[in-house]
Length: 154
Image (tube, rainbow, N blue to C red; front, side, top):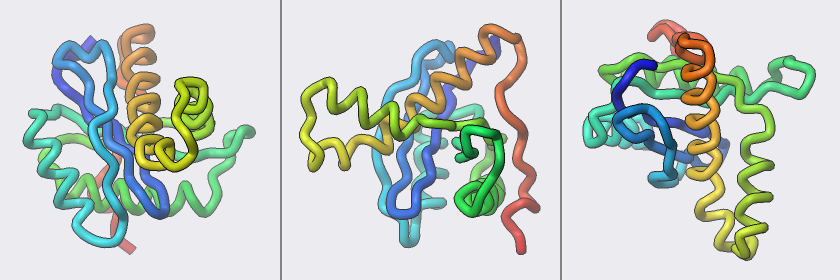
């Protein structure tokens, strides 16, 4: 298992959830939720620097049968721009059902829908990152696929 903090990123149309791992890459915790609309790449680069991240893990929304739709195309484009904006590698990992599971967990924890909305994206980012960390620990290989900086062009 590689060491070093990683950031998990859940890219939505309105918000972006961010999570961070501990330095040993064992556990992921929600950090913050960013509003889309400008400045999010800069803020993610700042967070990567603040947390001394060695990698960013971006959730790729795919359907249950593994197909990629419009949302996946948008996330791939965002991840390419992100890879060009941060000084560390960016990887895409399958994020099937993470936002749904995050909503369910927060609801079970007693948060009403208004309070859930403000934290669900960061919680989903933590689930994406935790899944990637667990996969790496079990396989010995980094989860997902690397993003090249030219994926954001077009």
